[in-house]
Length: 428
Image 1 (cartoon, rainbow, N blue to C red):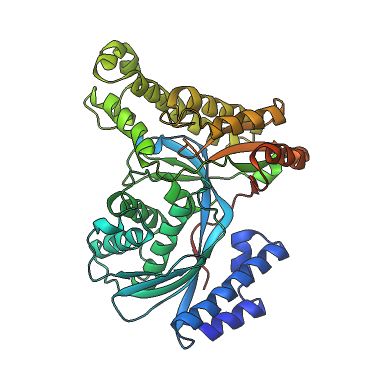
Image 2 (cartoon, rainbow, N blue to C red; image 1 turned 180 degrees about the vertical axis):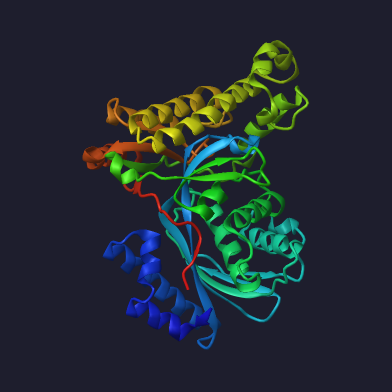
């Protein structure tokens, strides 16, 4: 931590440009954008909490799921990447037991950290995440105090880029730096964020989102042992492929869909229970097929189809990582499409069965496939049911693709993104 004036001077003089370049690439405009946001946050912190304070500067990125749709909660494999949209924060300890969080565009959040038990009234709120993260650090033996934060975000809310995971990782990074001597590694920070979301926020999420945000780059993750996930960086420069990563906002809001998101893990676990297992990763696939009639009698057709998706997509996620490591992007695209087809027909997470007339995600996928004309790849992105679609678009077709999608879904629906090589980071 440093005093606010020193942080301001270091940003303006370019002393922190190396750190900013690591986050967003060497482009002058990207560095300038980060610098401007951080200077604004320092000014906001000084105005809200006092100019004489000491503080640190922090960043956590959004993420894109590249492979393994609804496999993480079954202790499976995923492929994910951090993206070049992030949350930035200026934060410092305040010597009390209260956390004050000012996030641009939102009301101030105040959390008394003298009580680190779940608060029913906070369920589903950012306050629940902050309290849950602080609680987990406290359980690990750290003394957590109050702190003040000013933050802003370019991670689009409701975009499927997991602004919630970026938020959790950012708060975890801040607490780890302010009170824990940076002793928790990035994987642990991700696990703490998941704990808060599961036990305080009330959402039964897996760990992929938090890990991708925390670790950065493209990562192949194996959750065979969720307590010790195997995280392998995939050394591949997506910009060299000749294709651009595009996240398409279907226009359908994925808020208030906790029940829909909870159904796939619950149904997959019901299949696993037929074999005395908790999750599908612990079920032998051959035994599953051999006992299909018995499993069907005990569960449901949809649960079985979702289990089949898990077995297929768990292998596909690993094959996607291997394709990138072998610089075989054509093979990678084939596998992306395979995963997308499995999500549509087996996992069945493109729309809510309770709202059969609202099928924005299938429509977005169909329009994207039409525009691509057999090139590239398209799949549902993230949890599904609403939200976003992921496409790999030839560089030469980016603007034509954008115009075509916007003609149907509206201006601003396409977001062309880069993979960010660095995950959660203490900037200064």
